[in-house]
Image (tube, rainbow, N blue to C red; front, side):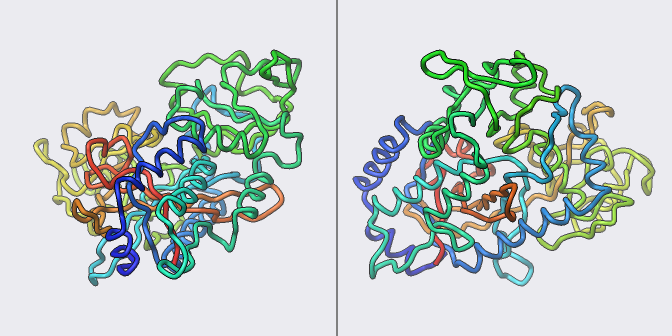
Length: 438
């Protein structure tokens, strides 16, 4: 988006430098990267990154300060996954944004989703560093390029993560847990994080109960007591794979969670209808950055304005989403997305769902889905293969003894409907990327 820097980068780009980038990432992470790395970083106005960071912080404060919302979100935690020892606030937040063309013709950020769950903090720092090294991004040609947010430098970034994840414990008593971590595409991030912080990576299904404590086995087979868990195990994956744990997840264990599992449900796509002001009875006002969204149960059911039209349907229509005045069996909602609330990496999203597809979801399950106004990402990154669109994620860390801090950004480049790296496999100049603020 900084035209001078984009032009400079494109003119100097070489496939050899890109191959060097991939080789450097493999060396730093100790393994090949299992998802597509974009050929290019992006160069963004620092003011835009700061605006996105502030918007994510503001939205999080709205949610955590609304007792009605928190009480409703509490009910979204499924049986068997309500974990004791909840922290006072999420330790990690991510806020994903699209850049769309507003009615005034200007680019404007719109929220894709918020999630109280860690992202690839370790890997992303390495990726940005290696972009800088592989392409010589510095000196007079490029000037100062900032990869961290909130005035952080590399040392401050890792100190923030240490405070949030380790929190003063002996590193060997802190573990990063995931479902079968050696088979996860995010394993490079686990390895970078573990090496930098001195913690262990452990399959959550291999934790051992010892009285009221949990333990793991180190490389020598020695049992080590766990004081704090950096949780990367996604609840919907555990449910889908029917993962059986050797301990009761809901028991009151003497262990701290860095990224307490309950917050995964509390701050998620569940928040979007509240933040867009479409939930009846909620005191939360619609936020300018949040596209209209409604729970499917409110869209189809409940006391609406006509037969088969729920209050959520009318709320979206009044918010400006193009919808007919009344539902019809053959209708296709071209301007809507259907999203499951608790899924990762774009799983289960349906573009332009038909009325029949919506109605086929059993009534008792409709609260687990939302319909949201479709956003059309504006292609803003000039590449040899045409303009590419960017989704920008702000990564926040929130230690127990400090404020919620925007630490870094992450970028996904794509040219298809979906922005995730899994949805742009056969393309070039797309995939996981990093942003430099100017």
